Length: 166
Image (cartoon, rainbow, N blue to C red):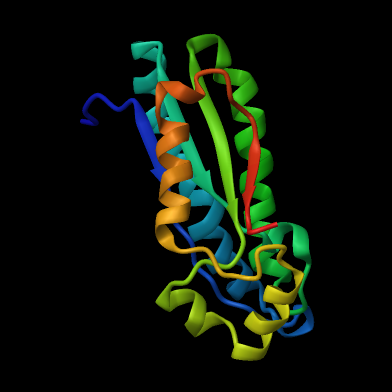
């Protein structure tokens, strides 16, 4: 039995890259099962509770990869783009129950997983595109999530909020 839930933050991500022609169907299923399909099941369970409370905030973490279309990210970026679209549709379906669904779309965030997934040259190239010329830290992302989870964002739903340093 799921207890009372009024905020759900989905940080799930399987970050693996492969050139499209080298990406097997099993590879794609593994990425989508983690980054997309598992979230369908979790959100369906949680939304039942939030609708009964007539209140809630779901915050799904996506990735700037869904916009940047970098080589080798076809499956990963597609899984995150699918999550973004799903979240926006759900926001329209559950708004009448005072449940908000938003997407946080970070660029590079200084984590061990990010450094493991990206070569230094890629990171340097990305930094040249950013107005602030720096990588976000986890606290930058957490502060946005905290805002979206709070009543201070009570009129924000269905949004993909980029947090990538410009």
